[in-house]
Image (cartoon, rainbow, N blue to C red; front, side, top):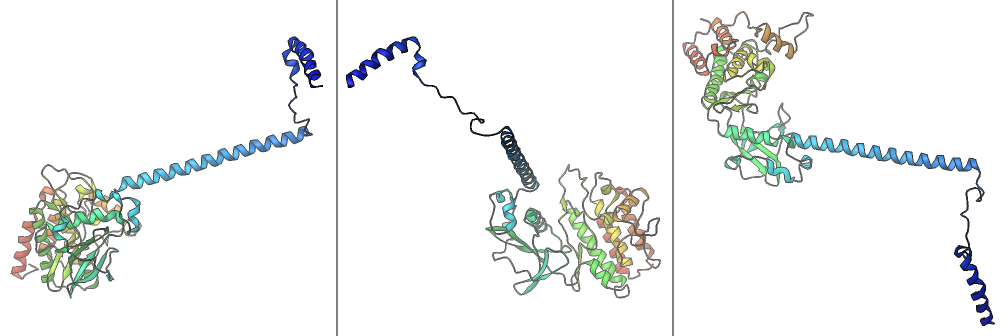
Length: 381
């Protein structure tokens, strides 16, 4: 039986295969959608759904990519603004980018102890009163990690500034593993800023002898700074501190600049109401800008008011700081003095506020004039 079947396959199959090789392979037609029982309308619905699904996928991909791009740009901008990474903002984990901090020679003034506890906050969000070895001190910290380098620079500046009429640096404290804990420990002045003192004190309670002594100390500090090729650039009643025993001392050195021979200074820094015209115009300037600010400060000693407090616009409203700056430049506006202010005092202030910086007296000349009047005791002559 098996031989018969094989014989039949060998004779019939071979002859047919020689006629057409493909005829021996059965072909099965691929089933169409119609043969599966799907109508034309159903096919259309399925196709539309597929297209809609693809559109949704494309939209999701585009949105995700755009969000990533915006995030990357934001991160890049933040990094470009300051070398500290965003990880430092937690104040707990140091970032590898801390190597970018220039610590200068702060180790020379470092106090080997943990950062001091911050107790009584002063007017500024970064200033506190604390205690060091039983003595009151002012503690200046950073309100944001990105300000660490600025505080380092300020501490370095104060450490190298030699003058008894400048608020002295006691030292610096920080944790090596957390540089954002940096604190500047500064001399404590028990009456606070001159601005606060003037606002809280009547003119009769602050006699002219004390006012001139205050002005002498400020001029003395400016003389020492200028002799050391340094410009304060932000002298005003808020950056002058007063003490019932030590008198007045100059502080606030964040904007201060040590001038190297050949430097061309044009940056506008400081407070507008005390700013010299050449600085407002972004022109090259010198230490004479401090003398202009000093002249404005003299008006505060006389009036106990903010400079230009009586300056009004056409509508009778106080002029903004920007408006005052424009009038200082173009209308030669200067702060006013009271009618009973000594004439020589007004004259000295106006010389300091001369439009031409070369016509302003030096800090040494101002100091001699004030000391002479203080020695005479005749303040209204």
